[in-house]
Each structure stands twice: as C-alpha cells, then as structure tokens.
Length: 102
Image 1 (cartoon, rainbow, N blue to C red):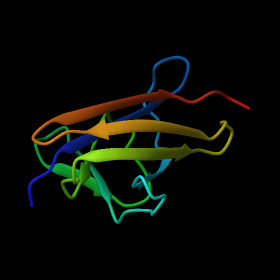
Image 2 (cartoon, rainbow, N blue to C red):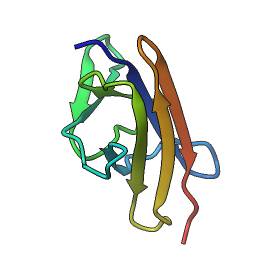
Image 3 (tube, helix red, strand yellow):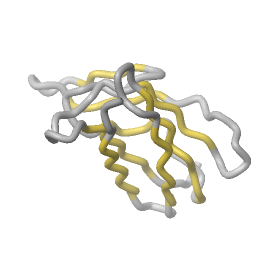
C-alpha cells in the first residue's frame, strides 16, 4: 500500500539512545500494530515490538498511511512523553524525543 515511513529515536539528556517502550497511534487514538527495526553493526537488522532498540533511530514497520500519528514513549526512571508526527506519501518523518529523568 502506498504510504510513508516513520523513524523514531528516544534519547536521554546526554544524547544516548534509550530502549524506551514505544507505541504508535493513529489520529483516532487507535494503537497500531508496529515493529521497530534498525540496521545492526554487521549489516543485518535488529527488530522488536513494543520497545525501541537502543542502537540508534528505529524505523517503524509496516509503512504508514499518510496522516498524523502520536508516538508514545516510556521508560522506567523517566517521564512519559508523547510526540506528534505527520507522515507524508513517499516521505520519512523523523521523531527524536529527549526523555527527562524523574
């Protein structure tokens, strides 16, 4: 199906990537079935559901229908964060969120 991509990174105040819990919701607040992946250090892919990989920005799969999305991030010891993203047809929307310590 035609759509766009979403790439998500969660970091701490020092700029280190975090393995935060993550969910993506559509504009109606419906949680989407999604998995998060990034290219591994030896060329393969690392993928997971429900949590970002701490190795860098994660791609969201599958491709998303163009529109507005809410990215929900949480991690023990940090304040929860919700970030809005707009995905365009054939485009990659980048979301980078800094999580604040409790």
